[in-house]
Amino acid sequence: MEKKRIAITGGSGKAGKWIIKEMLDHGFDVLNLDWKLPDEPLCDTVIVDLNDLGQVHNALSRYNGRNRKSFDAVIHFAAIPQAYTYANDYIYRNNVMNTYNILEAAANLGINNVVLASSESSYGMVFASPFFSPQYLPVDEQHPQLPEDSYGLSKVVNEVTAEAFHRRTGMQVISLRLGNILEPNDYPRVHESFTKPEDRKVILWSYIDVRDVAAACRLAVDKTGLGAQAIILAADDTSSNLSTAELVQRYLPNIKNNKLPGDGRPALLSNEKAKVLLGWRQQFFLQENVEY
Ligand SMILES: NC(=O)c1ccc[n+]([C@@H]2O[C@H](COP(=O)([O-])OP(=O)(O)OC[C@H]3O[C@@H](n4cnc5c(N)ncnc54)[C@H](O)[C@@H]3O)[C@@H](O)[C@H]2O)c1
Image: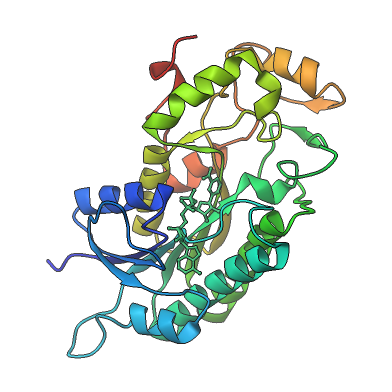
């Protein structure tokens, strides 16, 4: 049987390289589209500026013609992954046009399966000044998205763009609202933050191991017919050694509607939809990587 072909954008970045590994380990053919080369080449890379639809179209047509099929899916993780690291308009333009171009080219080439990297930043608290509390807990996919920064805004726009392309072609587009992504070598830094719990308040003490992100991408690519879905992807637990009840009492005292269990360290972001729609389960836990 012919291998499934996957294009991964941003494969030279932090999350991308783990997604490439995951897909290669599961027998997919993988091509990386990025505007820089990876430190460690795991598959072919095409240097592409995703702001340019012509380049995106060309890269995604790589296997077209001569009776060879195009890509089965695109996992789109390329972006400037933070607010205020570049000029606001540049972040917005890059992240929004990259995503529009990926979806436009996929639509034109008959690629019916796309995964997008969205973010918990789309809810707005991460880069808000002053910080504001969620309206209720746990935060789920229905919680209002209220960004004031151009990064969070770009992620909201991208989710809406995904819905438009689903309407246009019927393609499946899964937008993963990712919590704070941790590679194995990030765990010591999180451990250090135990002495300053307020440092991780803006991300609601979320985390998600990059290997669990990669697995979710693979599960999404294996699904069909889910439509355009925004799905939170965060760990079951928090990245703090304090109980969630204590974190909420200390740092989010004004939240009236709190349905989180009173015991333990349940996450403030709900990953229920990822479990139900993707069959995803967390495999990598903070407690296995740091001492409490
Ligand atoms: N890191 C996190 O904690 C986190 C949390 C939530 C969401 N996300 C999202 O996950 C995705 C991956 O994040 P990351 O931390 O791996 O970021 P990263 O910066 O390490 O990787 C992003 C990659 O995208 C590439 N890229 C950016 N713009 C491009 C363009 N115009 N053309 C071609 N390549 C381009 C960069 O070269 C880079 O290799 C991003 O979409 C980010 O917004 C990340």
